[in-house]
Image (tube, rainbow, N blue to C red; front, side):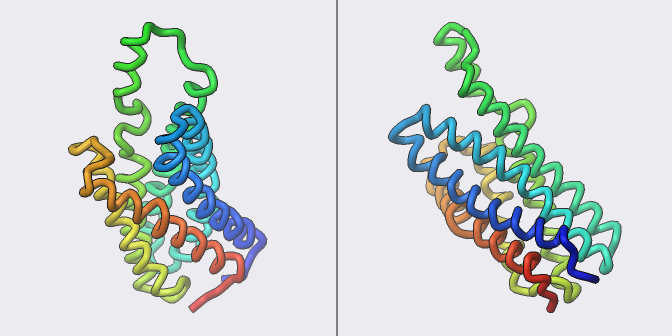
Length: 209
């Protein structure tokens, strides 16, 4: 497969997505504790940007993996895009409410803030569906030679962490619980940025194994 202009574009988007998801983690975990309003604004913005940026590398990965199994690659793309766009919509929803908070009584606003997002309840798309997509991507990477084998292993690890986070957010809720906090820290500050940046470099250079 030829190295195309879209590969370079997708590679750049992937690198930016890795940087943005790292900034999201800083905003969501660090800044939000000291300045809740600023942390909420930045985390919503970065989540929106990451979801949009991720759509390009996911498409480029599909173009490389469809040679191995077109239907599984297409399924992974559909799930991956659903997860990315779900994250973008979730971020856009939070951003809209942060910039223009609805005029509600304080007790009602507090109650509504505790409800899960209607478009991405407890991270169903952002974590759960995205994790399933990465499982399929990792499996296809291991079957072929269009992407580095190590990238597939990293995708497996990220997929496991994303599913753990979704299940944790669904059942534990408290992000300070170590069962949930450790996967969140590993994913947001290390594994997720590493996956996107590595993938971005591979796509940008047109690297094939």
